[in-house]
Image 1 (cartoon, chains in turn orange, purple, brown):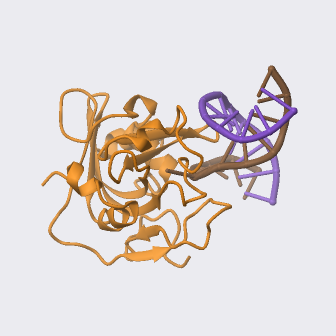
Image 2 (cartoon, chains in turn brown, red, purple):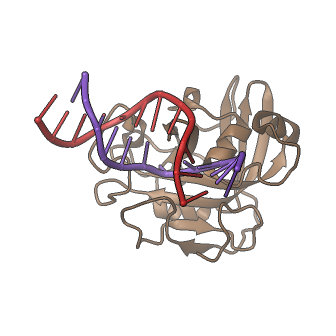
Length: 195
DNA sequence: TGGATGATCGCA
DNA sequence: GCGATCATCCAG
């Protein structure tokens, strides 16, 4: 089944935890790639100093304040893109960052975009998976769901993995919150299950 | 361990 | 306008 707005209308913490084990599908530039989500992070609004929405709406974070089930892509460090899904009811900013997936389909396209021969290390990080899947700011504001042209949708298999909560990565603020969720048994994490 | 590389936003 | 900062990655 394909996850819709009702799924994403809940809190970013709930959505981030339940997305572990779900499958991300993305059609971009006539190639369809898919991967099993193994690592996510939750970002809230007003009370989360690490969130882009912490200081209120800006041109960049505008979609975080919109309806749930929408793609939020931003450009970071002048090099990488990061893929998020907007969560929570409209008007309440929240998002889940997809940090790592296990590649399933479209390995050839992923290797070509990443300019790598090996299967390892293709999608085990937020910037890496965006490069592999062809994610850039053209997808910002896109509604989730299959369709013509660029499309992103998420399905949830019946079998769910074990899920562990850890602290978020790459932040200088709110490091104490255990808002990163992983499948601790996955070999495709951006960092091992230890921290 | 640090450099690449550019958009963003608060503040002046 | 200016500049510190940034939810990263990889070579060395």
